[in-house]
Image 1: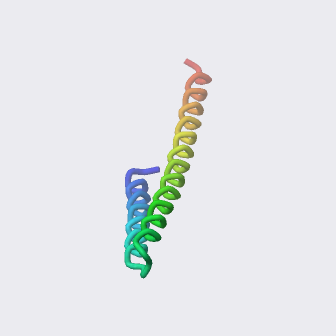
Image 2: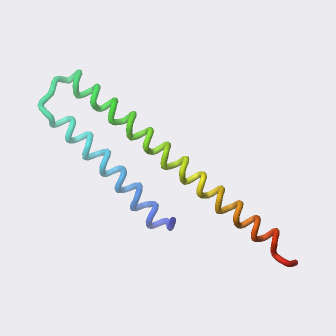
Image 3: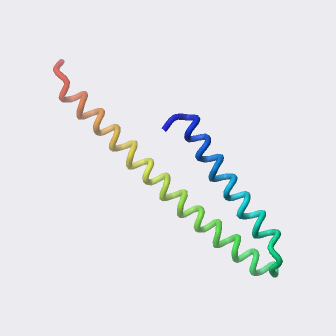
Length: 76
């Protein structure tokens, strides 16, 4: 993933999170309900982010392993 694509992806995630928070804060609900929804939303966002990071980590390690294998099999 290029630097521009990664920056765009994280900007998209941040924008979505800001939009969700603003939407929840402007909804006509009691404070306790709003805080519970915010906490739940942040928990879900954290889980998704952790999944994305874990998947990225796996992909990076797979690419490194392929590179090492190709380098080892190269005639020197």
